Every structure is written in structure tokens, then in C-alpha cells.
Amino acid sequence: HLIPFLELAKLLASKGHKISFISTPRNIDRLPQIPQTLTPLINFIKINLPKSQNLPDDAQSTKDVPFDKVRYLKLACDALRSPISDFLKTCSPNWVISDFVTYWLGPVAAEHGVQSAYFSVFPAVVLGFLGSPEVAMCGDDSRAGVEGFVKRPKWVLFESEVRPGRFQLTRGYENFNAIDENVSDAFRLGAAVNGVDAVIVRSSYGFEPEWLSLLTELYRKPVIPAGLLPSTVATGHDACWLETKRWLDTCENGSVVYVGFGTETKPSQYELTQLALGLEMCGLPFYWVLIDQRGPLDDEVIELPRGFEERTRGRGVVCRRWAPQFKILSHDSVGGLLIHSGMSSVVEGFQLGKPLVLLPFLVDQGLIASYLVEKKMGYMIAREDSDGSFSPESVADSLSLVMVREEGRMYREKAKEMMGLFGGRDVQDKCVDELVHFLTK
Ligand SMILES: C[C@@H]1O[C@H](OP(=O)(O)OP(=O)(O)OC[C@H]2O[C@@H](n3ccc(=O)[nH]c3=O)[C@H](O)[C@@H]2O)[C@H](O)[C@H](O)[C@H]1O
Image: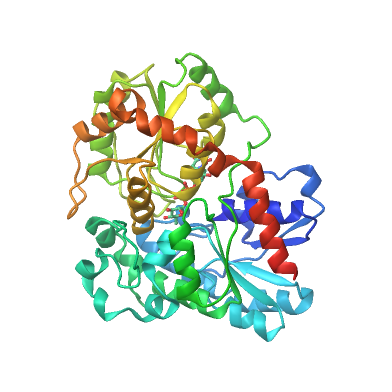
């Protein structure tokens, strides 16, 4: 969630406000450069995580550890309560804006007379589906088990088909349940909302009018959309970009599909195989950013089908390191995206007017994907709801529909139509002005 937090910090700084951006040393070092004009206003503060016997020494972000070890990162993060409290006491900022993992921050801030807000990188549909803070923290009788979770929640009174896939709920088991001494993500989220003075959401009324209105009812405190936070092109040239650009320059305009599942989603061996065979079958050029290991402790090996890279050489690229995603998407050769529905990737695709094929893996991604499908803004690859299985044919068919075929023209047109809502600087600026007005009144 670092990138949207940095984007928010940049937007607030661009209005003249001083920001202290607190994170761990390695995470701060990983951040993209900020424009020189903002450097006097954003002070990066590094706080070390305590050592944990369950984590590798330099693990500081979710992508550094396998999925089942993420809870130890959250527990390590809980130990930051005391240094952050000291910071608030010494620096007494006007506001502290935090993520849901640090769910204890609101009351800590209040002790020092500092106002607090939870900034949700998830859009309102994800928060609204999870319900009021009390329901998120303690559950709800109408929602027992997976079956209770795939129905429209009783507090959603408007028509909506939004729901996660059953297989996504099973995959997210580690996050949804308290394990060892770690509380669940839903509890952290509910408690984060409960403890703060206001909730800031990466969204806009243009994008999610009903769900944002629902949140104000559920939360009974100010809910302010921060805008969709479109990306800005990172400065600087890395070797990877020059090599990639040379390849993209050889492809026809609008022909390449960008395939990427964000910063941490590693597909299973089954998903990797189906995807690879689907990409091979569809015949389109592709640029695939593949995460095949989550940190040094991850010993689950996944491999592309035998001969895949030879058979697709020249037509496709598989990149196994950090790729300059936004620069690649901005290239004219890229005609569409196959993504997991992570919000930053959704925004980047639409701000550039490029259509989306969706393959969500986790619950939040499933909710965003089903919202986009309901609004006819994206096309989801068909998967078996119970176990998430899907065929190479459905990958190939979805890609050709959205990228090439006449029946899929509506997705290409919709993506162009979305450019203003997702990328318009004036739309974003208006949201930030309203947010600043709220924070300073
Ligand atoms: C907990 C998880 O946080 C999330 O972020 P995630 O990284 O998965 O995806 P995005 O929001 O698309 O964000 C990914 C961001 O990283 C950039 N990028 C990524 C890979 C790369 O090689 N190069 C890049 O530049 C990309 O351009 C985008 O800005 C989502 O909420 C997700 O739903 C949630 O489950």
C-alpha cells in the first residue's frame, strides 16, 4: 500500500502541507523518487521493525515473505506502537493518516491530542461489503461461513451483484481468521475505522456513488474520497525500461497485452500453467510480469510449462523482476491489461484508456472485479467458483474478446470513456481540495 500512500502524501504536499512519511528503512528505500519541488515538504522517517524469529532479517513488506508468514509482519508492525507514540508526542502533527494494519493508532494519537484518519487503499465497495466496524471486528450472524459471505450483505439495500468468489474466501483464510496471537485483517480494519476521527478512501463519487454513501451510514463519521490517485510517470531511466521499450517499439500499436498481478500475488503452479497455455493460445503479443518467489523463505517452486518461453520467443516477454509498469502501460503498443484487479493497476489501465481483463485471486480483488463487471467496465475470466479452476481457452477467449473482437468493442470504448474519471487532473485536484478543506477546518 506504499505507492498510494506516497501519492496521497505528494498531493497533500503539493497544496503546501508538510508531511512526515513513516515506514521501515527498506520500504522507504524502495519508494520511487518524488519531484524535486516536493522534497522540502516530505520528510521520510525510517523506523525499524523488531527482529522476529519467524521472518527473514530484511523482510519488511508482504512481498518479502510467503503468504502464510504475512501475519508475522503484522505482529512485528504492532511493536511500532511505542516508537510511533513517541514520534506523535515529540512532533505533534495536526493529523496522522494511517493504514488498517496499525489499527491501534487512532487511540494512541488521541492520547497526544493528534487527530487521526484511516486511509483506505481499498475502494468503498470493499469496505462496504465488509460492513460496519462492529461487524468487521466481531462478525455477524447472517454471515457465518463461506455461504454467508457470498450473499449480498443485509446492509446493502441497493441492487448489487458484487460478491467475492468462494475460492477467494478459502484462499484468504489466513487473513480472515485470527491465528496465534495475530488478530484477523477484518478485525484490524474494523478497529482502525472505529478508532479514528475520519476515514479517507481511495475513491470518488463519480466511481462509486452508492458504496461511498453506504459507508457514511455504516461508519457514522466523516468519509472523504481522496480521488482515484492516478499514477504519474516515474522519472529516471533504468536498464530494464530501455530494453523493454526497444521490444515494445517493434510491436504494432494496441497489440500487446500487459499481464501483471501487482506487487505480491504469486500464482499457484496450476494458475501459472493455465495462464501460460492461454497466452500461448491467444496468439497476441504479451509482456508478463511474473512473481515466482516471495522472499528467501518461499520454497514453493512454480515453473512455466516446458518449452513455453522458446515457443513464444519474440512474441512474448516474461519479466521476473520489478518492471516499470506505468511506463510500459503508457506505450502505444500496449492495447490492454490482464490484471488481478489491484486498485492501482485498475486506475493505471483506465487513466490510459486501456481495457481490462480481470483474474482476481484474493477477496478484495474479487470484490473490485465483480464491481467492475457489474458496471460493464471490465471482463472477468470465467472460473469455477468453488475451486477457482479455469481453462486456457477461457484466458485466450477473454483476451481476444476484449483486445480484438467486434463483440468486445464495448470494453475498449468504455476504457476510453473512463480516462477522464480515472486520470483527469482536475477531477483529482477537486477531491484533494475538499480533503484539505476538511483536514484544515
Ligand atoms: C494487499 C494487496 O495490495 C494491493 O496492491 P497490489 O500490489 O497487489 O496491486 P496494485 O494495487 O495493482 O498495485 C501495484 C502497483 O505496483 C506497480 N508495479 C507492480 C509490479 C511491478 O513489477 N512494477 C510496478 O510498477 C504498479 O504499477 C502499481 O502501481 C492491492 O490493493 C491488492 O488488491 C491487495 O490484495
